[in-house]
Structures are given as C-alpha cells and as structure tokens.
Length: 76
Ligand SMILES: [Zn+2]
Image (cartoon, rainbow, N blue to C red; front, side, top):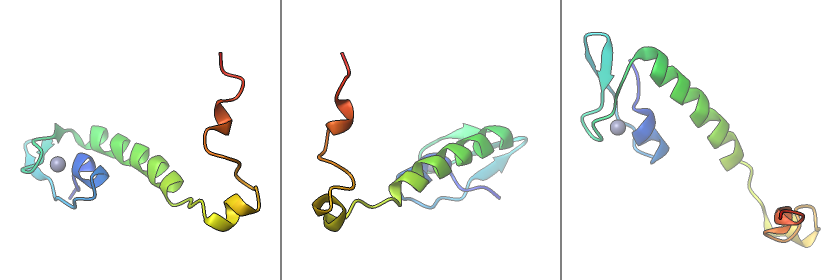
C-alpha cells in the first residue's frame, strides 16, 4: 500500500489505488510504478527533514542563522 507522494507533499494523506503494476491517485490523478513512488518518497524525506528545522526568534537574536538572504552574498 502506498500513499500518494504528490498529495502528501500538499499535506493530504491519500492512499493510492492499484491498477496492474501501476498505482494511481483518485484525488490528483497521479500514476506511477512502485519504484517511482519510492523514489518520490525519498525526495519527500529530504524536503521534510529541512522543514522540521525551525528557525526560532532566539536563533535570530543570537545571530546563529544570520539575516534572511545573507546566503545570497557573493552570487553574481
Ligand atoms: Zn494524489
């Protein structure tokens, strides 16, 4: 059983329906093989690991993060 990686990325938890060796989502019409879905899960995990890194006001006050956009310094 798989959950739709597209809907999951939008904070919707939709279970995919199986059709032969493909899976499809009744909500967003995504279709994919098991391999494709597992690959998308890996990408989502990377994304969500960053999303759980919260920048708090304390971090900003302590100058641990730096002002927004400071990472763009040095780009042409
Ligand atoms: Zn979906």
